[in-house]
Image 1 (cartoon, helix red, strand yellow):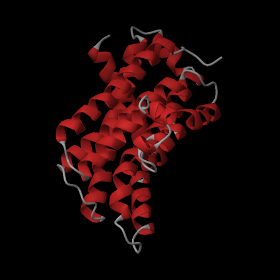
Image 2: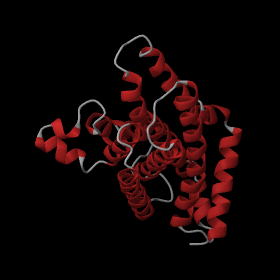
Image 3: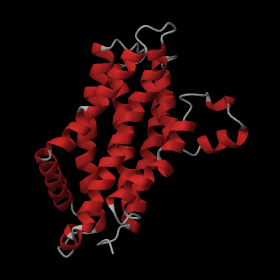
Image 4: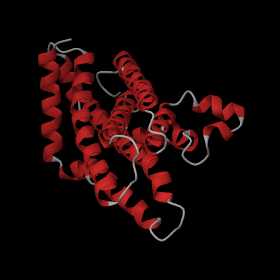
Length: 245
């Protein structure tokens, strides 16, 4: 692995995305719009529903968007033969994946800062813990989405197939993460499955920040999410193919 090559790959990805205005809008604007729509839905309802669901969705929306964009973009590189040409150069699979992870990690940071700024600054999301830590959790979850997107792209042959992985990888996490039903209130089997899903720990961290604000617990959950992201990148490096058949 070469840091110079990794940075070169990251720069190339960022240049491509900067030129693709639709992808850039999806990455940076769509999460803010969705969170604003959620706030609007709950505006006239009693019970502080936005404060209840907002933090969880602040983690969920970046995760979903990064998963979709990363999986499709990586598959496009492979199906067009770009990855095969890159790997004929002195560059390993890990250089390629880390370069992509770095590029999308930077985009995730910008995306999360914007989403947190809109949620807390404009929409009045009530946060008991540090606002900057809310951003850290959002960034970690977005990076996780990018890492899983890189992983699943290795098993798809078309962009449509990459999108089809979303029900298998994303929807179960949305349903079992504890956003709709507390995880401890689920049947024992579902609670056990929930404990194995990274989204559960991201939601726990977000809810901790708007509740008791135990920063030690928040950091523990962030580390778990980061561990899943690193594991997904390692597995992606082991399964990445040079070209789609």
